[in-house]
Figure 1 (tube, protein in one colour):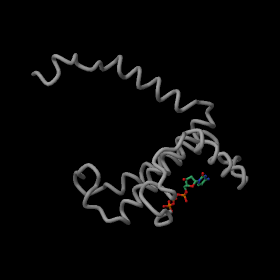
Figure 2 (cartoon, rainbow, N blue to C red):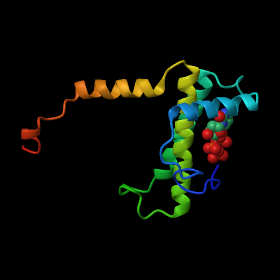
Figure 3 (spheres, helix red, strand yellow):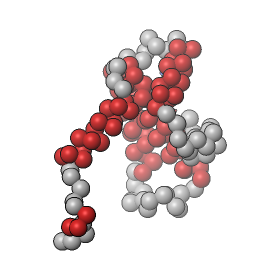
Length: 128
Ligand SMILES: Nc1ccn([C@H]2C[C@H](O)[C@@H](COP(=O)(O)OP(=O)(O)OP(=O)(O)O)O2)c(=O)n1
């Protein structure tokens, strides 16, 4: 789907959008096309992995890329946004079809990460 978006952050330039909205839009998208018959967990997982591959291709052979991708052409950043969006959309749809609340699961995982990897105390931070 190269070149259909107006900007790297999406067609409307929206920078904050809820997972719930994306979930509903993906559900509507599938229903309107009678594609619910294809949106089963394994199919969605394979589609997700395929899109991760397309995302990886964008970075392949470039060497390390500075944060913000400052030297990229606008066309390349739009493409990057499209592939990131495909990954997110399939992830949201996969979570929905599996009956997992992705937002809640992500927040819980961040809490678990903080327990597993505690931040250094403020007075010892940056001391080696
Ligand atoms: N059965 C399908 C097929 C597509 N999509 C949606 C989710 C993705 O956001 C996008 C993926 O579309 P394509 O398979 O056409 O993949 P690309 O957009 O990456 O196209 P291409 O692979 O040609 O670059 O469309 C979907 O929900 N269910």
